[in-house]
Image (cartoon, rainbow, N blue to C red):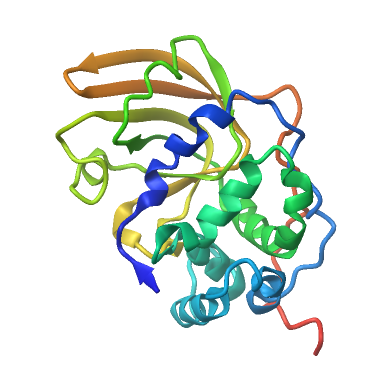
Length: 252
């Protein structure tokens, strides 16, 4: 089942240690065929037992998508944004755990068809230069010191609204908190394709490299400013994008 608690905005608590490692670039999906979302998730059924039910839900909501995307492309984004109960059964949670694992290349094979469709959709959206926010109810200041560069290997959901992040469903306004203020260069604005459009959601691509530019402590609030920077070579393999007709099942 889907829920409205957006834990995906605080995934940095998982990434904090893993990001010290520089791993192999993410690839293997780029030559896969573009198929319908129903077919793309077939290899994921042993991993995510509710995935077919969730696909049905998002496909009903994506019959007339924005931004020139096909229903399957839009639905692949919406499926990523959904929170399931419990949240660690969510597709985004399983995918990002795989991307962050040291043997992720092998574990990523069942995801190749989905990633081909998902990335085709994301790369058809224009890069979005903006300031975005992401946070967690922890003190991560020691892991993100000024001048440090690092890679977030998973996709990172952010919001362009500081008010959304400070609401009770997210990090709130009391207690120990770390808020990342991110100067984005290549994020994608996905709020028109999100299961929660009021979140003003944008998505940092997997394998985004950032640099810590400043740190401010105000009581229990730790604010860390990040700037997206280019890597020496692509850490996320691009996919050939086109403006496709509605995707038909390959078995047809």
